[in-house]
Length: 167
Ligand SMILES: [Zn+2]
Image 1 (tube, protein in one colour):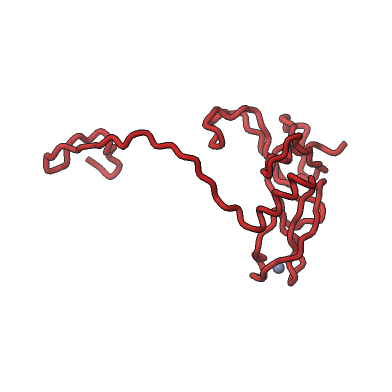
Image 2 (tube, rainbow, N blue to C red; image 1 turned 60 degrees about the horizontal axis):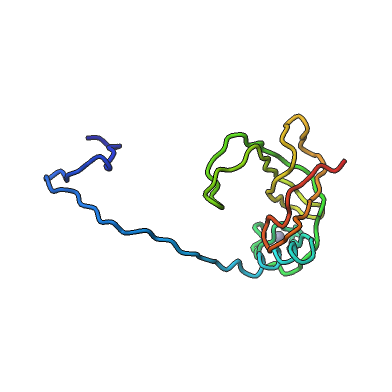
């Protein structure tokens, strides 16, 4: 008995009562959530026009990509939409070589993959995505990157297939 006792191994309460369980059955259902105005517009622009739209703060002039409703520095609402990218600067990267369960589909994540932080031209904030380079010797912070669009776009962040190095 200790602070970190594994309760799953216990069959009885400390008083001696049997610990009972009930089978709840298999539960499965689809669910959807509303993305809101800013993310809806952002993703629809990726899908329909293959362009990145950010929002500009009327106080400090920062352009947020991805867009958000309120400036994190000035606490004012932002309504001015500005196009940024599709090229930008690599700010950081991680090459993942160990597979794990992909929360998007329940299957094993295909490795290697490279996640990146990129600041698109005209934006003041960085966004996370992927790139098609899996060798850290070929990547360097400060490199120029360019978005490559997916053939079938659905209104998802994956409408950008990945970023590639601008040669
Ligand atoms: Zn601001």
